[in-house]
Amino acid sequence: MNDMKNDLYLRTLRGEKVERTPIWVMRQAGRYLPEYRAVRKQAGDFLTLCKTPELACEVTMQPIDRFGLDAAILFSDILTIPDAMGLELVLEEGVGPVFNKPVRSEADINKLTVPDAEDDLGYVMDAVRVIRKELDGRVPLIGFTGSPWTLASYMVEGSGSKEFRRIKGLMFESPQAAHTLLQVVTDSVITYLKAQVAAGAQSLMVFDTWGGMLSTANYQTFSLSYMQQIVSAIKSDAATKDIPIVLFTKGGGQWLEMMADTGCDGLGLDWTVDITNAKARVGDRVVLQGNMDPVVMNTGTTQVQDNAMQVLEGYGQHQAGDKGHIFNLGHGIQPFAQPDNMKALVDTVQGQSSKFHA
Ligand code: CP3
Image (cartoon, rainbow, N blue to C red; front, side):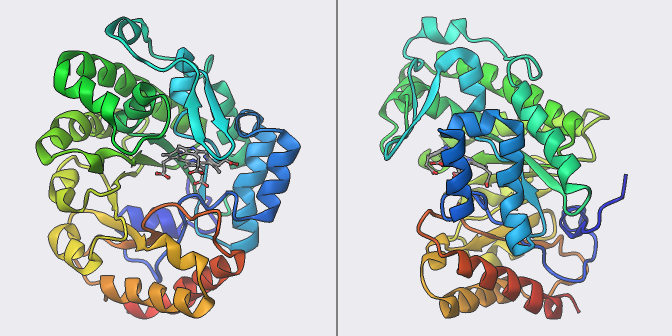
């Protein structure tokens, strides 16, 4: 089992004492890299790239090869599940993801069924298998999903949104229908994550990109309770119970205690959260992942170095009882980021963090 050449990321997630802080970056494979844009052009479009395991593997490896990050993340998207449910995902240039057949009525909701992870999403599992083989133990592979609330938001809105008029309308006017939708998505997510682990994913992350749009009470009822089901399902199955799972609610900084109560292993922090304060609140219960402002990556090398040090200093000395810290940005790296800044960031974290682990 333990044939990893660099298993720092997994050891950190298990709460072990480590020699330095590991780093990976949300959206580390993506449009800021010229070699990504070249492969994406070769594939023709984003979904073909996701659905061709050899190409998905190639772009997964690009940031590992170029920057020496401490973990790889499966190249895919959170919207694969709704696509497999028949909503027909298209990625429109300059618009973002759009569904040809969004969920617009209770009848639409009642027609949804849980996709089969191997029959309907086998390309994702194939990508996991190909990537694990290619990684050959260099670094661990992170599998992922969107949270049920975030997936349901895209499914009902039909695209990205600022106001979330439709999904919130459903939640306020027909809460039972919203719960039916969230439950079928949750069941799909659990099946999907278990299949990723069976295929070779070594840790799991849940992206709750839009949970932060909710009131506290509605966050608990419509987002967190479904993430709780996911954590419980992973932790109660012998095949997945040892796989660390990290929850990330963007805008969820005020809810860290209740997120830690789910029994997850780690929490992603967006950049608005004071990491010193987060550590005082939940740092003895969960590993913290984050949280430099991603926009720093679009500026100069000095700014990257300074801001990275601020995050390391913010978490501070690793002492007995602290679960640990994984360096990341507070949200995905943007297409405008400078590739050289990624190098500076990785060098800073890998070169400077050992002094916080004395
Ligand atoms: O490197 C990695 O992190 C792995 C791959 C990955 C992608 N999407 C690739 C991608 C991951 C983990 C995701 C997650 C994802 N997808 C989230 C949750 C994380 C977050 O950013 O909050 C969300 C909300 C999506 C939905 C989505 N997919 C959007 C909004 C877009 C369009 C614009 C954007 O943000 O990049 C996508 C497409 C997408 N997914 C691209 C990539 C590299 C861009 C595709 C391209 O234009 O080539």
